[in-house]
Image (cartoon, rainbow, N blue to C red):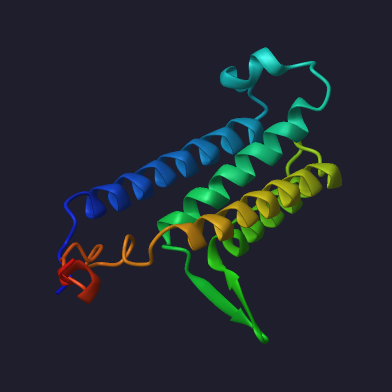
Length: 159
């Protein structure tokens, strides 16, 4: 009989809270950029070559990983394939945000930013897919892992 592992709900709640907090941070960052303000956290990286692209890669990738784990590796069906929902949602947000920069005077659309987002989303989605195969499906279920013990015939055999 499945038992609820005491840490399972807490880990899920922590993962969702961290992902929501990270998303709020990204929304704040985009808002600052849209209004032409500097982002203090990123100031040390100003002027470094490719720092913007690395930022897009890492931030998009981390959001992908967090959302994928928070949705318990949920997939959607696309034709005959099952695709992780998290990367799809993050890609939709990234495309919308980058394309919206055409309409904002303080911003510039940059296809290479979108490519860095896509690379981060894909890389972290592949990592999430690998991770999903390593984590027991019971770990993220509502019931938690099955911690009951039943002796097998080899455990009870007389030697």
